[in-house]
Amino acid sequence: MIQLKQQTAEKIAALAAGAFPGGSLTADEVCNMLEYPPEAAMGDLALPCFKLSKSLHRAPVQISDALAAGLADDPLFARVESVKGYLNFFFDGASLAARVTDEVAQQGGKYGSPMDGVGKTVVLDYSSPNVAKPFHIGHLGTTVIGHSLKLLHQFAGWQCIGINYLGDWGTQFGKLIVAYKKWGDRKQIEEGGIDRLVELYVRINNAIDDTPEGKALADEARAEFHKMEEGDEENIALWKWFVQISLAEYEKTYRQLGITFDSYKGESFYTDKMPAQVQKLRDAGLLKIDDGAAIVDLESYGMPPCLILKRDGSTLYPTRDIAAAVWRKEHYRFDKAIYVTSAQQCLHFKQWFKVVELMGYDWYDELVHVPYGTVSVNGAKLATRTGNVVLLKDLFAQAIEKVSAIMAEKNPELAGRSDIAEQVGVGAIVFHYLLGSRIRDINFTLEDALSFDGNTGPYAQYTYARTCSVLRKYAGEAKWRSETATPEEGALAKTIALFPERVRAALAEYEPSVITRYILELCAAFNRFYHECPILSCEDEKQRESRVALTAATRQVLGTALHLICMATPEQI
Ligand code: ARG
Image (cartoon, rainbow, N blue to C red):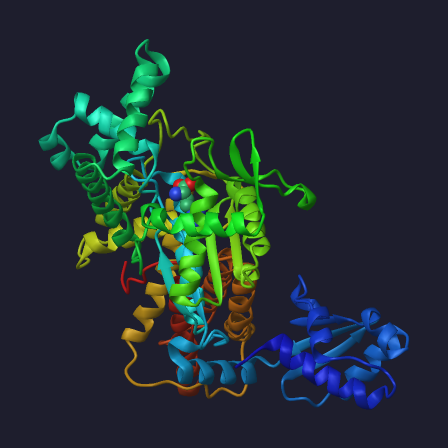
C-alpha cells in the first residue's frame, strides 16, 4: 500500500541510523514531522530538520545536507533538496503514476483501506429520532456522520452493527395518546402519516403550555403514559401503531440516503433491562439519595451528578443508556461502541461513561462519543416543540426538485433522469453538510449546496461521471507506460497516492469531512489534468494509454471516496 509519508520516513530513519550513529530516531517519529508544503516549489513533502537536531545531536543544515546526499539516487524521488535546514522531496511523477495506477487496478475497491479492523466489531448508535416528533434537519448530522463512520469502519474491515436507538418510549406518548383520543382521526392518520402525528403532538404541547386546561391535560398525559407502562392493552396498541407509522416515514428518508440499519432496538427495548443495572449500582454503593432521587455523585470527577431514578422511581435517559450498553456488550461483544449525537449531549455521555467505569465494567474505554455542532437553515434556528422546523424530507424534496429542473434543461435525453436527480439532490445536501469539520456549527443554504460549479456534491458527482464517460469510450485495459509525466499527471498521481493516509486520518479523528475535502482535492487534480492533457485524442499511443490508466484509477478512488460519505455515483448526469 502506498503511504507517501510512511515510506519516506522509513527511508530517512534507515539513512539517519547509518549516517549518525549514536542518534536515535524512529520512522514513526519522522512520519509525524513530515509536512505537505503549501507550495509546489517547496516540494511534495518536506522535513524541517531542526526537529531532528536533538535526537541526532547535529545542526539542522548538517542533517539536511547529509540526508539529501544519501537520498540522491532513490528512485521514489525525482530530487531531494536541502534548503536552509529543510529537506524538500520531489516525487518522480512517472514512477508514482506507474505505482498508483498499478496498485489501484490490483486492489480495486479495497485500495486505500487500512484493513486494521479485521476480526473486530464496532456498534454504531446513530440517527435515533424520537418517534412522533419531527425528523428534522437537526438529525441530518447524526444520520450522515453516523452512517459515514459505519462505512469507513466497514472499509477498514470491521464488522459493523448500525443501531437506530429509536426514542420510542417516554412521556411524549402519554401526550400523543391524549391528543389522539381528543382530536385524532384514525383514517386521517393512516393517510397522512407522521405529519398528522406531529400536528397532534404540537397541538397538545401548545394546549399544555398556553391554555387554562393545560395542567389537567398534562396530568392526563402522565396518567396515560403510566397506563402504558403498566401494559394497558389499548395504549400499547396505540403506541405500536404510532411507532410503525413513524418508522415507515423514516425509512423513506433512509432509502434516499442509501442507509439501512442492522437493529431498530429503541429505548423501549431496554425497559426491563434497567432494574438489574440499578441494583448493581446500589450493591456497589454508588447510589446516593438526593432530595428523593437516586444519583451517582460525580463531583470528584468535576461533573454534576448522573441521575439514575427520579423521585417517583421512574428511570431516566442515562439509566437507559447504561442498560443498553451492557446489553450490547453482552450481545455483540463489541470492541468499540460509537455514539453520534449533537454536542449538547456531551455531558450526558461523559457522565454515564464514567458511571459504567465506576460500576467496574472494564470495557468502559471502548465507548466513544462523537459530537457535532448545531445546524441552522438560512440563519434560522430550530424549534422542535412548536413544530417550526425544516423537515429532512422537505429539504430533500426541494433539492431534488431544483436538480430536476437543471437536468431537464441541460440533459433532457438522459435515461433514468428522475433517479439520478434524486441521487444528485440528496447527495448535494449530504456533501455540503459533511464538508466542514463536524464540531463546527453550520448554517445551511440550499443555493450553496446545489451549485454545479462550486465545491459541491453535484460538482464531485459530475467529475465522477466525466471519468466514466472517458472510460466508456476506451475499449480494453490500460496501463501506465510513459517514462515521464506532465506536472498535471504527476499531481493527479500524487493525490491518488494520498488516499490511504486520508482514510486513516478520517477514522482516527471520527471525521468524515477529511474524505469530503479529499474528494474536492481529487476532483480539482483530475479536472486540471483533463483540461491540460488530451486523453483519448492524444496522438502518442503510450501516453494515451497512460492517461486512460490514470483516469481509471481516479474513477475507482473517487467512487470509493464518494461511497464513504454516503453519496451515490451515477455514471451519467
Ligand atoms: N433520541 C435521542 C435524541 O434525539 C438520541 C439518542 C442518542 N443515542 C443514545 N444512545 N443516547 O436526542
